[in-house]
Image 1 (tube, one colour):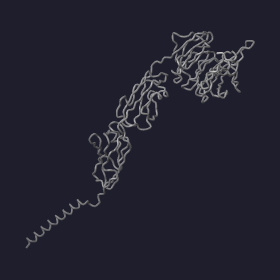
Image 2: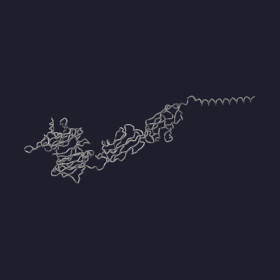
Image 3: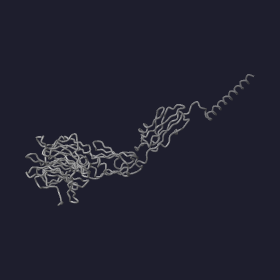
Image 4: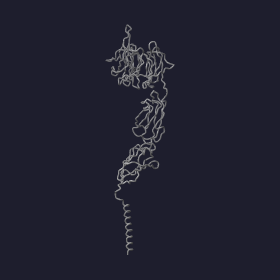
Amino acid sequence: MKPTASPPPRWDAKMAYDSQSDRVILFGGWVPDVRQVAIDLNETWSYDYANNTWKNMSPPLAPPARSGHALVYDSQSDRSILFGGADGGYLSDTWEYDYNLNIWTQMKPSIFPSERCRHDMIYDSKSDRLVLFGGFSPGNPDELNDTWTYDFNNDTWTEMLPTIRPEGRESHALSYDSRMDRIILFGGWIPEQGYDDTWTYDLKNNTWTNITSSTRPSSRGGHALAYDSESDRTILFGGNSDDVWALELVPDSVPVVLATSPSDSAMYVPLDASITVKFDKAMDKSPTEGAITISPSVAWSATWKDNDTLVTFTPSEHMRASSRYSVTISKAAESADGTNMASMYPFFFTTTASPAVILSTDPADGAKDVDRNAKITITFSEPMDQLSTESAISISPGSITARSWGKENRAITLTISLEDGKRYTVTVSDSAKSASGHQLVARYQFSFVVKNGTEALDATTLMVILTTIALNAIVFTVMYLRKKKMER
């Protein structure tokens, strides 16, 4: 590339790519003066690849001149973040640059890393955090090996303090493998010694892992790493050599679906059933939820438990009756260590005909003059589960003294001690379940009144009584007349 104008030559400058503005941002560095003394710079430049043009942004305010700092673009916040460096002394300030407004702003975190230079910093897009490691600080006898994260939205630095970590170093390089969700570190040096080790950092679990292999680049510092998302490789160049290396992170194992509920080909699934999927390892919730599709479509809410190995989808409304539902988990489902499933996982189930309903009751709702010796019968639309249905039925006032079931468990008969003249209310809660497992469509109530024992006799009973009295009277009269005749 041969742009018509460009920044002057310099050392220890830093660049970051602003993906939203499609510009490369450059800041600082140093140049030697006529006496070969380093002069630090505080220029801000942007590069437009499409037009092959550099532009000196000349913002009204800029960080102090420096070199050996770190500059990283935070894509979620659309800001380039700068930390530390050297200007004859050593710095520990944090700045953010807004390309669209051409404004640098100094941040004011209450806690921050110590002053340093020749550290490195990278943006972890899945965690939305900047990660800083190592560097050189004059206040330490050795190079630093601390790990920090920066949250731009809350302007907070946090020291992570992992149990295992790389040895202290400076002039190393970091990159971020977005597919595996891992930060990669290679090389760096301390006085009179270079490093040729490779480490990965898992921010979610705050763990550094040494993955150095027998085939690797030579020890070096001042080199560069960059992740190529198209080829899924981390590319290394430079340092004290002009060779090019590529690194591919290979997952230990792919995530596997262990079980689902409903199971594949399940029948008579309740219309309000939830769907659960059990994985063999912790999953990354957002891409995994996005990888699961359910057809016909229903609005669901997802909840996770068991260390993010079990996800439950709860419907916001009942599913369709007598319908086949297909669930597909695509290869985009991703474990917490950044590994995708090897193949999609489909399963299906069929819902039950409809929720159970109460067809009739005896006595009927609103019945009066119910005999005190009557029994109560409730008839359902389908066979019911005895235990859940019996526990779902209550009466007020009074209590149920006995229960019996009819053929196929479609009707239950209740024995209750009823009292004359009282009103009774029977409640069947929606916890009653059918034999196929789905609940009653809704709570059901009915009431009736027991007849009063002092009320007038019905016509049949009265006729019997009158007939009996009349017969007794005739018998008495005949006997009386016979007695009088004998006395004569």
